Structures are given as structure tokens and as C-alpha cells.
Length: 408
Ligand code: AMP
Ligand code: MG
Image 1: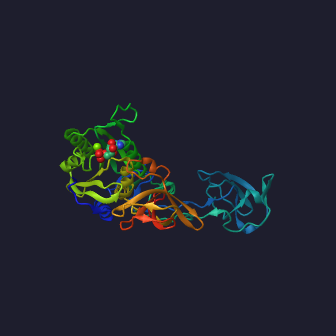
Image 2: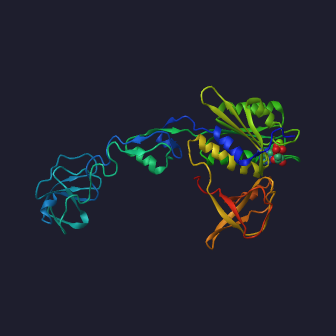
Image 3: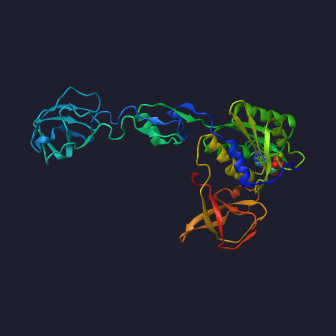
């Protein structure tokens, strides 16, 4: 029998998150930074643009002479500044992004200019500042451009590069090792003899971990013997911040993963009042200093392993990566059909929700057994059915967790 008391889902998730602290920041190249969480405040040392720059192709001029013709005395391309100086009655041909030559205070854009025999004539008067990007228009010297906790995407990386930073302090990707357990398992590419099944959880959990931005390691398959399991667990803990196993944590005689985890780590709970995924082990190893490794013993049934990953492991991996938005958004949705559930444990039914006639409508994705991973294919929500109610009528409102939306 499972020796651990069954604890409520919310208590389980809160316990996990209490142990999931951001990994210490690491100096990281901006090329490796997409998706990482910034761990420092970033200030611009210099303004952008750093010099008054032309916003257009045209002519750098003094505005004072209005629409009078000017003699073209030089060309300033984008790039090194030439020594030219624009005097009254003069113009310097200029391209977008080029530094405005001394003496000029405006740019006459090429569309508003007629150049003939070295003389340019505006088709309308020029005003001071026309098509000139002043120093610091985009970013002022000393300005805080990024704050800690910012997720580094293309725009943030552009800002970093623009102010001259090719490295930043960011929380690293958690290293996650994934181990499958069971004598019945063979690799996906191998023929399955009678009694054998393909190890589908490992590639799926590796995909789920990679989707959260983790650095993922495969530990392969360990058979149901104490030594192989202990060896697999030890190998994972030697390389990773987080170890995920699947299988071997329920109540059968051969459920040895839990024992292997107990041999290395402190188990916080081993059973959750939820469906699917009642058998679920969470354990930690506290090292000197603040470092703590997390171990998740997921149930073996494929749908149960992925549902519990989504609800319990994913938020923890995000927390390790420094994210503060950890949970998916929820909406209220009406059931398109009647639903029966346990009424005893919180149940997460895989469903498809769609916006119709001013509200969300939910349709469950067929058979909801813990083994049927097709219940997740095409699902965009988990219907969260709380204990206390075991039957819902069509049109009843339930909570839907939007597993296709970013955390908030
Ligand atoms: P267990 O908790 O180890 O008894 O596993 C429960 C069910 O999940 C059994 O039917 C296993 O065959 C199945 N299972 C366990 N691990 C995997 C896996 N890695 N891939 C696919 N099915 C699995
Ligand atoms: Mg097993």
C-alpha cells in the first residue's frame, strides 16, 4: 500500500513551489538568452541615438532659409562622420541614420526636394528639427531600460545589443533529467514483444520540459530492480537540478521508484487527492548553502504523467528559471454535454474550449482514462472539477485551465 497520506492538490502544489526557488543568476551571452529571465537591472550608459541622426534620405540644411535653394556641398552616408559643415545657403546630401553635419538643424527629405546642377530646391519650407532624431530620443543616458524579472525576448535582446551589452545576468535554464521505469518498456524505435510496450513517457516528458525552456537530459529506461533504479536516480542527481521519473510510484509490489527516491531524497508527499495522478512523489535534496534539488516521481500512465507535469512540474520549472508568473489562466466555461466525475478528488478533464455566443463552451476529449494520452491531443484546457460534485448537466459552468495560454 502507498504509505503516504493523500493530500489536497493545492497543498501539493504549494509545497512544491515553496521548494522551487530561482536558480542563482549566471552571466549569459545574449545569443543564449532567449526565454531566460533577467536577474539584474540594466541601465544604458550612453544615449540612443548617440548623435543627432537623419531619419530620412535627403539633405541636411539650416531651416532658417525656408524654401530657398541651397548649394549641395558634400554627401554624408550612414557611417563615419565627414568633416563637412553646413553654412547658410548650403546643403549636404544625407542618408537615413547618418550623423547630422555641424551647422545643420533639419533634414529636407528627398521626396520634397528637386536637385539640379548641384543646387537643391525645397518644394516646401523646412522647419527646425524636421526629420532629425535628437540625441537620446529612444533611450536617455543612464536610463533604466530593463528591470529584473523581465523575460528576454527579441525586443529585450535588441535593447541589450543596442546599448552595447552582449552579456547579461540571467537565471539559467534548469537542468532536467528524465528517467523511465518498468520492465515492460522498450525504446520507441524497437519492436515490442508480447508483454512489452513502448516507453512513450520519456520523449513526452522531455518535450514538455523543453517547452518550459529547460535543458533536458535523457536517463533512458531503468528496469524494475532496486539497483538499476538507484543507479538511474543517482545518475540524474549527479547531472541535473531536477529529476523526473515516471512509473513505479503507486501501490503495486514492484513500485520501486518511490523506494529509490526515498534512498536519495526527503519525500514530502507520495499521494495527491487528484485524478489522474493520485500516486505522485515529490522529494528534495538540500545541499549546503541554498542549493536544493527537486525530484518528481510521476505516475506511469501516460495521460496521468503529462497532466501532472503540466499542473505540478511545469510551475516548479518556471520558478527555478526565475519566472514569477507560474500558473495558467483560468476561465469559466459551460459544458456542452453532461459530465460524471469522481466527486471525491479534484479531477482534471482534458477538454477543448471555444468562444461561442459571448461565452466559453467546453467539450471533453473522449475517454478520460489515465492511460489514454489521446485525451490530451487537441485539448486546450483542463476542466477542473472540484470534489463535492459528481455530476454536471449540459450548460453547467465549470473552471477551465487554459493550458494553451501563457502563465499569468
Ligand atoms: P506503473 O505506475 O509503473 O505501474 O505504471 C502504470 C502504467 O503506466 C502501466 O501500464 C505502465 O506500463 C505504464 N507506463 C509506465 N511507464 C511508462 C512509460 N514510460 N511509457 C508508457 N507507459 C508507461
Ligand atoms: Mg512500472
